[in-house]
Image (cartoon, rainbow, N blue to C red):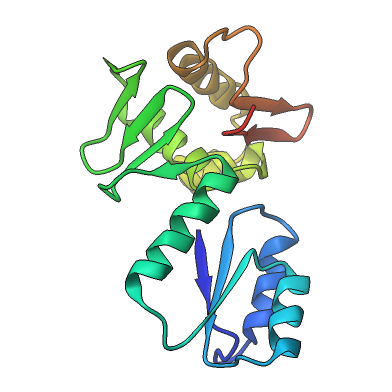
Length: 181
C-alpha cells in the first residue's frame, strides 16, 4: 500500500501516482490538505484508490488502509506485521509462513522472494527485476534459478502446485502474485 501527498517536492503527487499506477496495482491512498472536488477527481483519475483530506483521524485512516488491502486481496491482521491471503498467513517480523494454520518452513531466499511478491500484488514482475531485487544486481540473467525457487514456493503455498492460483507465470516475461485467484 502506498500513501501519497499531492504536494510533494520535485514530482507532484499526481504524477507520482500515475507513474506508479502505470506499472503496479498496489493500492494508493492520497493524503492531502487539498479538498476541492477537482483535486479529488484528478487524483482518482491519476490512479489513486482512495482520497483522504487532512486533518483526518487515525482510526479512519487505518480503516481505509484495511479496506484497500482487502480489495487488493491482502489483509492485515491486528498485528501489522502479518499479511494473509487465502489460507496462507505470513508473519513478516518472525519470517514464518502458515498454510492452513500449519507452520511451513521457508529458506531465507524463499521468504525474501515471497515477501517481494506480497509487496507487489497483481503486478507482472519481469524475471530480471525479481532476480535483482531478491538476489542482487549480479543475478539478472539466472532465470532457471528463479524458476526453481518459484516452484518450491508453489509447492508450499498452492493447493495444487501444478495449477497455481497465487503465483502465476506470465510467459516469457516473469511472474505475478494474485492474492484473489
